[in-house]
Image (cartoon, rainbow, N blue to C red):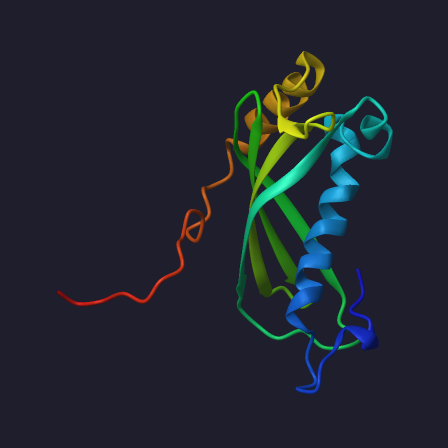
Amino acid sequence: MNIRPEWTDYNGHMNMAYYSVLFDEAADEIYPDIGFGPAYQKTGFTTYTAEFHICYLRELHAGDKVNITLQLLDFDEKRFHTWQEIWHEDGWCAATGETLGLHVDQSGPRVAPMPASILKQLQKMHEAHAVLPRPDRAGRRIGIPRKD
């Protein structure tokens, strides 16, 4: 993906909101492989993001070329936990994103179990990603550490 000039702010680097855009667009590319995506929504089910954490590591600028990776860390019948990284073409990581996604029955809306076909795809992905190291930043929380 390319960083668009309109995504930059008055500081001359990419505005924080567009990191979310990059992470979201990258997830949309892989969702059809799992069984989610635009066609899946027609079944009355979809996915919602319950929580999303971004760590900004280095600035991106207009014209930069990046790749986004996605790693499935965990899942159960109703939820999936993913990790993403934005990598600059020069080989450095610009940002990380951690997501808790929900499978949702749109008639409620309410969280609902995923069909067996999607759970099977998630299991395959989870097994393939099991050889990857767990990212050091995964599971972080926001706060100001205080000394007792």
